[in-house]
Amino acid sequence: MPLQIRRNRCLAFLRGNLLTLLTIIGVVSGTLLGWSLRATGHEWSRREVMYFQYPGELFLRMLKCLIVPLLVSSIVSAIASLDLSLSGKVGLRAIVYYMTTTVCAVMLGIVLVTTIKPGKDPDYKQPNVTKVIKKETLTTDTLLDLIRNVFPENLVQATVATYRSKLTFDKNDTKAIKGHLETYKIEGEYQTGSNVLGLVCFSIVLGITLGKMGEKSRPLQNFFHSLSEAMMIITSWVIWMSPLGVFFLVTAKIMEIDSFQELIGRLGLYFMTVLLGLFLHGFGTLSVLFILTTKKLPCRYIAKMGQVMATAFGTASSSATMPITIGCCDEMGLDPRITRFVIPIGATINMDGTALYEAVAAIFIAQLRKVEMSFGKIVAVSVTATAASIGAAGIPQAGLVTMVMVLDTVNLPAEDVSLILAVDWLLDRFRTTINVVCDALGAIIVTSLSQNDIDKTRAVQNELEHAPAHELAELEKGDH
Ligand code: ASP
Image (cartoon, rainbow, N blue to C red; front, side, top):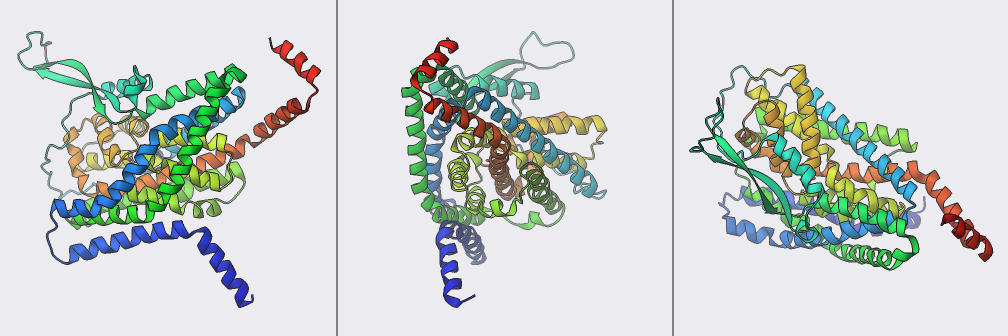
């Protein structure tokens, strides 16, 4: 090939992928700088680390600020513009995909942790754990809260707070039941953090309603459509901050870690088990599913997700990465009505990486604590790990909090979470990357499966647009 052509192709590739390359360079150089700053031997104070993190924090804040308006407007406008039966089919396909992949991830995690047995060590001394998470609720409460949050009582409040039950213990309560020394009151409180699940649910209902209202809802549909477009334009500006943002976030994170000693030994083996699981799930299970459903190879698509993966790794938040995931799907030429419908929902409830990690971590801790795992217990772990991943917010280390629920099923105390704390910050980044890749692949799969239906509806719409006026009047009469 002549040199000139080769150079032109190279330039075109660089131009097309400049931002992705810069973001990946940001992650790599952030890691290197973090290590070098540690290697200087200087004890970095919290304030110094905060200064390093500051530009990254600003980037994260910009992304987070887009989440609520983008999530609501995207879902409402996407569902309203889809034909009702089509949005039902798309929604069903997305849910089947989310459930299938999550269950596969949990099963893969269980197979790996029970064969590798990272926590089995006869000489292992039972560690003392520090209380990091105080147990304030039962698993049942957590599950009930999940459903409560699906139905927010106040929409404005849902944008800033999430409902949570709290058990208040009272040792002097005379109503103590026989066999229980303590009794408790069940109280509810609102915690800071958007109730994304509630917002998603309300947006779906609003979208369906607008779709049903037809022409009468046009102004509101246009409003949500423009809002979502405007948010995507802001995203395209914020995205240029990502190389610098992830660079500083990664550097500061590496600087603040106490030691990397934990990556060697038992905890290292656990780390490798989760990592292997994430890798096999991302490049094995998801790829096979992709090939089976779309009859195409996923490599080309995964290669286009570099920007999304680097941002997910740098921010450790699938919610914050959501605007970038939608942008990436737009660039791949997917139908925006489908991506704006399935990506925000996926970012909220579909977390395969988290589900796999929850299952592996719970069984690893059980192995360390020498708790026998019966088949029944393993099934219970799979079910709660799936629920815990659905309930986990798309924010850094949210999985660690819902982990308490999984530990509860094997009768392990919530404090045992501290056994895996040391490596969680790094695992979080890898599992978030798989979470977002799974969402993006899901959008491609659902689009491909829905293509026939989309074409059919488009054909009907075309026919309607070109039908003579008297035929339209006849049709409308028939509708009423
Ligand atoms: N950080 C993850 C996410 O945002 C959730 C978790 O596993 O902690 O997807």
